[in-house]
Image 1 (cartoon, rainbow, N blue to C red):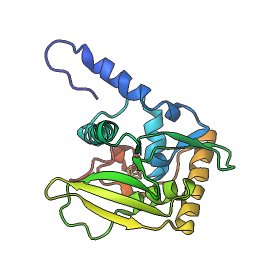
Image 2 (spheres, rainbow, N blue to C red):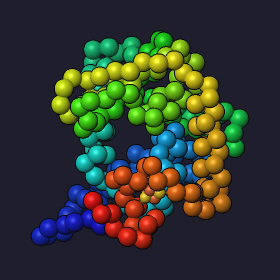
Image 3 (spheres, rainbow, N blue to C red):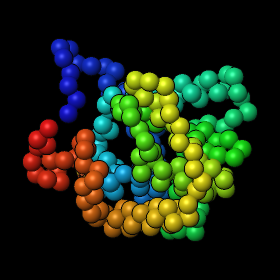
Image 4 (cartoon, protein in one colour):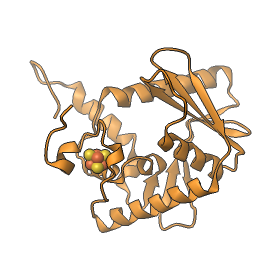
Length: 208
Ligand code: SF4
């Protein structure tokens, strides 16, 4: 629910429309975004069903960082590709939409933000995502950079793994099946932390 204070807002509806038009593929059942299948499939499904997007701080923080990096790259390193959207045909029943943050000659780079200071390993969902991009774009490496709220950025570099690639292909197929059937995907409770659909899934408010 949008909170408005005092007189009616003129800009909030414009903001909502802008965020919606920035995700056109989410309105087409035969186009699946990699980011959708790297989180709880039910959450992604429910997000597509929402009339209005959830416009919270996390959405803008992530977007702002990517736009800033894109701006800096264009200004100082124009030859480096960033934020390019690919629509790929992998022989599945749907097209796959992927948007790696940065593409270098030998790797794809994903840039994430975190409030954690100590990170000994990259988050599995980020690995699955970056691994997939590296595989499809035929790059020998992928790199995940965490921009931390305290401390300097930290990077993890690895080689793509075919089994992880296949794992995501299965998730894409499963998600697409649910979109076609208009049926709710199974719950994936490991992703429930901070999920806006907690009440819908558990019929109770989150305790913390
Ligand atoms: S509450 Fe958990 S199971 Fe339900 S949509 Fe969110 S992440 Fe998925």
